[in-house]
Image (cartoon, rainbow, N blue to C red; front, side):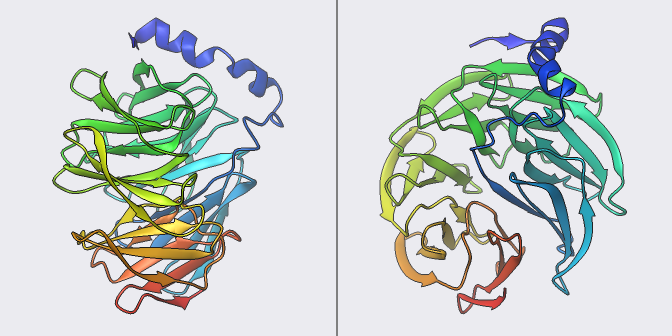
Length: 322
């Protein structure tokens, strides 16, 4: 594992980028499909997308109506709101950029070049740094949003795609590797890899508890959610869920984990701390990892395959809007 800075970063980001810059129709790994959903901190707005569709839709969550459409993408991959809700960041794996929008009027502010294959993104608590999985180079780019330039590029990954998440204390980054079926553990004090967790089967989305002790990981290959001891860096339990689970979403109150089951058109509900399946939510359309919750843990927002948003009442586990 090596860390690159300054001139070396510029070369790494530009290498391979000229091909798609010369032809905007160039598509990076078009056979790899994902959808993405982000809910604004004030829970008034949702931004959704699918890597097959070069448009991002903005929804008013109160009315469930489309509010705006953002264009200019080739394969949009991940969407994030800044913690203060002022900005919207969207990665595009073909263009190799991060789009930055004003989250009030949805005007494009700038584009950051981060290298081809930009998939999953994570942002730290104060909104000063963005972490970007670059599948094309098997790296993670640490992007300084205040200086508006890369701070470091960390190597040593194997097809890092959507799965990237920060520990609640902001000191550790967990990166999923689809090729090796492992979670890479990165210390953000040094930007160095400090461990790997294996035992997965086509790992997809992950979530981590507020105390940083437990990770939940979706395994679409064996239809299970893996329970990981984050400190011991090992899988300690697995829970059978629906077919092709992509999501492993932890509610804010940490009482439940919801598995988004693509092939079953359902969510499997796992109660914590017992780690037992209590029910299945039906009436969805190809749910994946795009699951978000209201802060009071009463509503789930689930992105359907047709880019509509299903609202699930978590007190009854029924779809109330679809």
